[in-house]
Structures are given as structure tokens and as C-alpha cells.
Image (cartoon, rainbow, N blue to C red; front, side, top):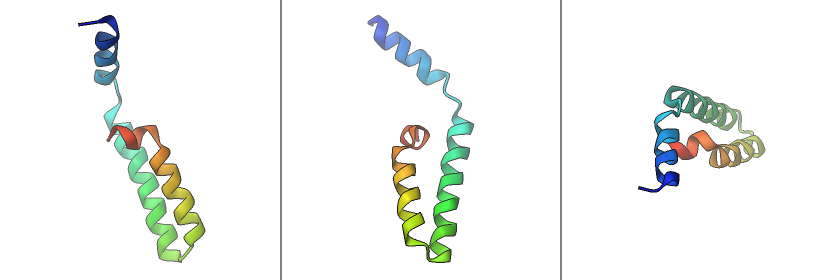
Length: 59
């Protein structure tokens, strides 16, 4: 195994998964609330934010 692969596995192991779930859920909740209000512009902006979120990508 190369050094890069070993380093990647160590980083993967050290990810705070609870934080990733919590932050992703908070964004999803904000998207839901904006859709309930009928604020299409906010929904699209938040969806874009969620897609680009590092934590959401991990999950």
C-alpha cells in the first residue's frame, strides 16, 4: 500500500461522522422550511449549497 492510500485511510477513519450527519440534516431542514414558505429562490440556493457541501458528499 502506498503512503497516499495509508494517509487517506487514516483521514477517513478520523472523520467526525456525527458532525457530517448533523450539518447535512440542518441544510436539508432549511430546504424543507424554504419550500414550505414557497421561497423557490432560497430552495435552489440551499440545494446548491447542499450539493457542494463536503459533509453531504461524504454521506
